[in-house]
Length: 206
Image 1 (tube, rainbow, N blue to C red):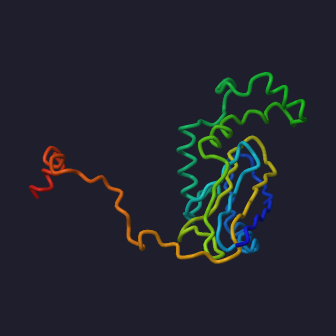
Image 2: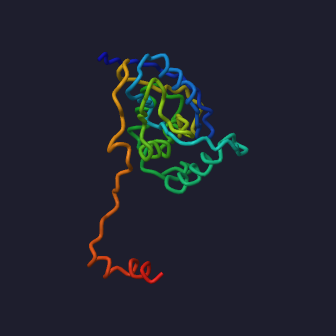
Image 3: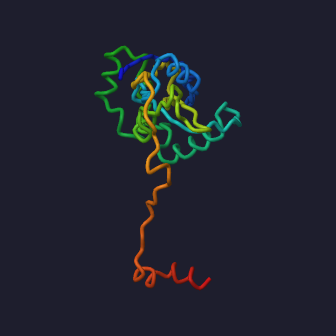
């Protein structure tokens, strides 16, 4: 059985004045098809520490900022969990040494380090996602889309998404587990536990 690794880099341009959601589903599907891998996995990883990869459904409707409604709702929640960097000393980062380092690596100004919110949001979401490839196709279910999320609002940025496809170029055997029957992961209560649990008592009275 031949095992194959196939890699591509997707170049993206973020807008910068607010978080950018790039729908890269079409490109990932094309990469998987071109890889020749029939069964395996595809990993999509951000090259940057202020970006994430997210697998979620497309909600179609757009707000006035060109965000899908689900992205709009997600951003509202993230703003509560990790508020936008809007004032000096709101976060400990960036400190004076880090700001000086930014000048050393030729950042266009100290303002580019004021993206602590983006770094923290990336920590919450993670920088990568892995999906299954079955019979040469991405297994995303009926609704899954793949988004590269740039949380950085400081400036427009050129971004890169790294894609690695790994797997076999051959068919695999039957995938069914437990003869295809659903497995029962629910707790099995004893008669004594059921007698002491008000929920079971209420159910019995109905």
